[in-house]
Length: 137
Image (cartoon, helix red, strand yellow):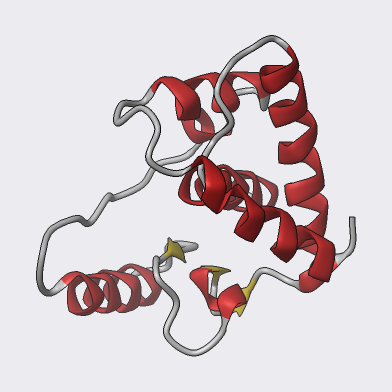
């Protein structure tokens, strides 16, 4: 898959949104990808207001303290690829396409076995974890 095809694949998964509101799909997908999230240390920032500011403060503070820091935000503000970055560098088009290709293969296995298709957010989250692991955070 190239970058445009990978973006289309994620967008097309919109038709699977609205399924189960639990962690079943993402847990299964991550297991099939080798559970890359288990290799990372991270802070999860959630809530209604102030997430962007909190992330900016944490990113700057931890970076200045010498940590290698990444961030995954949703939605993006300026460009799609800014959703995932490490040390100030966004995921490249080639990296994104490669990770989506890998995730799509795992999803094909899941759906062939009769399991539900992950949503765009679940796909992007899996891609972000793969990206962070590859960047050795």
